[in-house]
Length: 63
Image 1 (tube, one colour):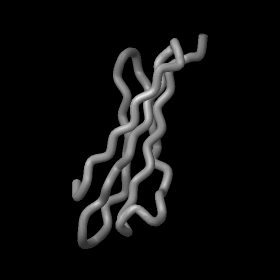
Image 2 (tube, one colour):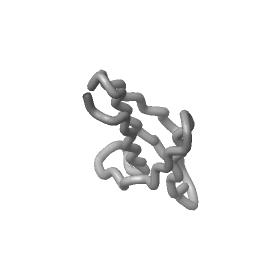
Image 3 (cartoon, helix red, strand yellow):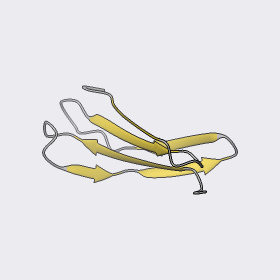
Image 4 (tube, rainbow, N blue to C red):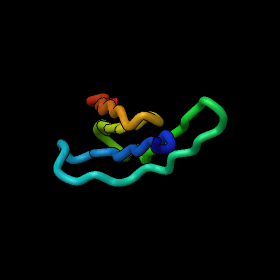
């Protein structure tokens, strides 16, 4: 079995280039910090994996 993990990348250029976010884990809570551009939106994309290796990917557009 794997240990649970989470990765977050933020995209501010329409999805062409992603920047890794800082992800913290405490108990059952995960927190990510992403840089917000001076103008426009950002699209954070997360990928989480549980202890069994099951994975989920999600993106929030224009956050």
